[in-house]
Amino acid sequence: MSETEQERVIRVRAAERAHDDYYKGTLTLFDSIMTFSIAAMRTPGLAAAGGIAATLGFYSANYARLRAVPEALLEFNAVLFWMFLSLLATICAPGLAYFSQSFFLWGEGAKKLSWEWPYVGTNRRSKILIRVGIGFQVATVLCVLASIVLMIVGGVRFLHLVAVLPT
Image 1 (tube, helix red, strand yellow):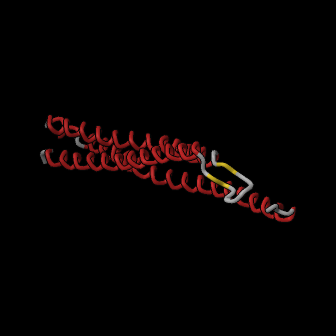
Image 2 (spheres, one colour):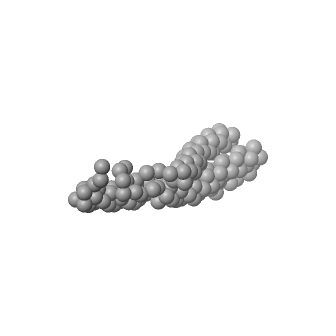
Image 3 (cartoon, one colour):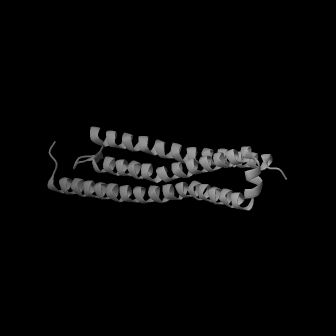
C-alpha cells in the first residue's frame, strides 16, 4: 500500500515533533540531573570540611591536654585521616558524576532518528554509552556513600578522642 502525499506530510510532521520532543526531553533531563547531583554531593563535602575545621579548632583549644597523652595525639591523627578521606571521596564524586552525565548525553545523542514510527530508537552504540553512564552513576553514588561512612567513622573516632583525654 502506497501512502499519499498528505499521509507522508502528516507522518513527517509527526516524526519532526517526536524528534523535537526527544531533544527537549534530553536537555531537560540533563539539566535536572546535574542540578540534583550537585546538591546531593555538596552536602557531605561541607560536612567533612566542617568536621575538619571543628577538629582543628578542638586541637588548638586542647593542645596542652592532647600533648600530655600520646594516645590522644594518635586518635587526633586518626580523626583527621578519616575526615580527609571523606572530603577526598566527596571531591571525586562530581568528576564521576560529570562522566556519568556525559555518557548519558552521548548515549542519547547516538540514538537513531528515523522518519518511520517510533521515530527515535536505540542502537548498539547508544546502549553501550548509556550502560557506561550507569556504571559511572553507580560509582558516584558509592563515592558519596563512602564519604558519608568515612565522616561517621571520623566522628566516632573524635568521640573516642574526647573520651581518652584527661579532664
